[in-house]
Length: 207
Ligand code: TYD
Image (cartoon, rainbow, N blue to C red; front, side, top):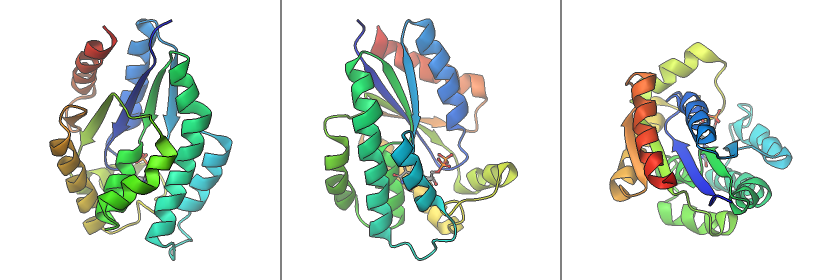
């Protein structure tokens, strides 16, 4: 049985994560992996319910600490029900967002602090840390522009441009602090170029 792997995809809203996840999934399947794709917040029956609460744009009064803990609750369920067991079974798990999103959105952009985010999330993620994280880097304005073209904006997407700028900047800071794990890629490059960069890095892990 192959050894399980855990890869996460991060980036501001509208950075093109889902397209790259689909392409990476094909690549891993070609290399003999059973692939499990998850998204955060969500990915289990309970976590999807929590997602509905978090992203509901009517809940403008949501306290940042409540927000942090709801994301962590959704994550705890996903890790215990899907991510952990899949990795133990030797599968490849690709998650659309993970704890780095909380670090950036709640820790940096909301201002709760990185340490607070890690301490709350330690209980949710246990030993599961991604082997590699791809950061699809995009200016905040461009991400929001792309999203507006797609669908109605949710509670997080409706945040101010200043908030989204803090998110984009926060991701870059995180990538600079942990260059071994986080691979920053310019999300404005053509899809196949981004995909090739991702494959090169993943090849190094699976071989
Ligand atoms: P989603 O529709 O999944 O956004 P995207 O397609 O951009 O991934 O919505 C998730 C939103 O929640 C997104 O705005 C980022 C935010 N978020 C946090 O603030 N903290 C978190 O821990 C996670 C996982 C997401």
